[in-house]
Length: 68
Image (cartoon, rainbow, N blue to C red; front, side, top):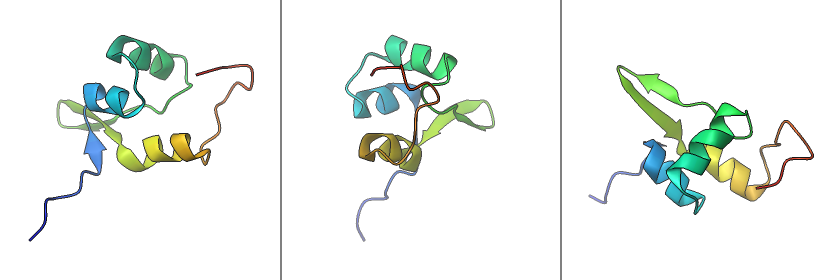
């Protein structure tokens, strides 16, 4: 049996997927440029498919003037 595939990750992992510091990731989440986390109990997790959609251009940013 292979390793389990992650479907949701914590903030630091999501930031690393986008190659940015967690503080910058959180700022982009707070201004709406990146998706909000899902809450699982008291834990916040970001869906991997949403992050991958941003990287592939499948998820539009709400403000066209915004730059990553």
